[in-house]
Image 1 (cartoon, helix red, strand yellow):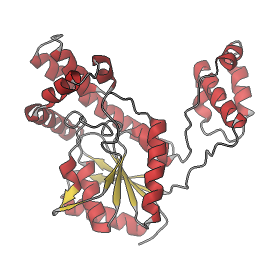
Image 2 (cartoon, helix red, strand yellow; image 1 turned 120 degrees about the horizontal axis):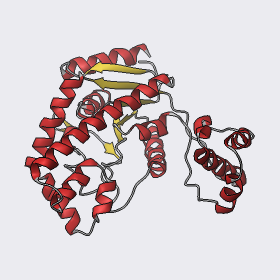
Image 3 (spheres, one colour; image 1 turned 90 degrees about the horizontal axis):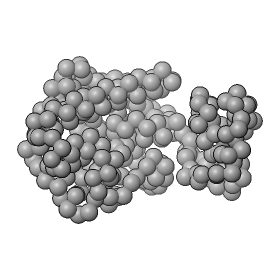
Image 4 (cartoon, helix red, strand yellow; image 1 turned 180 degrees about the vertical axis):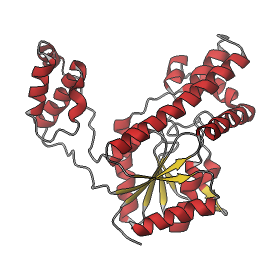
Length: 307
């Protein structure tokens, strides 16, 4: 097998079976999984985030997985913290001569790794912002172009984003002691693809099952533990709509219908993100999600051998 890649990435919209596929592949090649899911980091948020821990067990063997259940419910985790945590786990796995598999549907988290630059938690610089606000977008674009090693030139498409880009670039320049390097990631990317109607059917069936399994109780327990309705809305669709239902803003059927539609729309946005990644130069090897698991894994192995 070629060693031109040092990471495998498995992505796809919700309800396509990414985790199960990643676990089967990891079991065969003795890899470890790093989750790229922006919500499965939270403890006590299992049904609402689709945290199917049982998926990591194949033939009685639990595949090592990382960045799941690492933050308390009620806290707010972001892409900067994810990058920091990813790097720590990635480097530790590589030291053991093991291949990591990045798996998840949070496109921003996946790209934060694959684009290969390190984000910093750059503080707001109000005096700088005030001085920049007086400039036109064209003037801001010129000023931004004067900084070296700008990772994302598209930041200048609006005045607000251009100002923030200059703010970040200025912080990097003035804090040269900060290490902004990122290990050279050369990832082989697999995507799990299903017909749109199949995904829709799976989403609806899965939502019904999770509600039967106690997803409403999970949200109620979080509220009882002191997690605010505002924070739960921040965590995403399931927590937002179920909290509204528990607050008697609408009945059960309305909650189900609105949540079901919202998850379908979210799935479409995920695919839009992945298509944008392809247009941006990422090669995604799409695997038919309707194949038997053995066929999916075999297809992946053939692509891995060819790369």
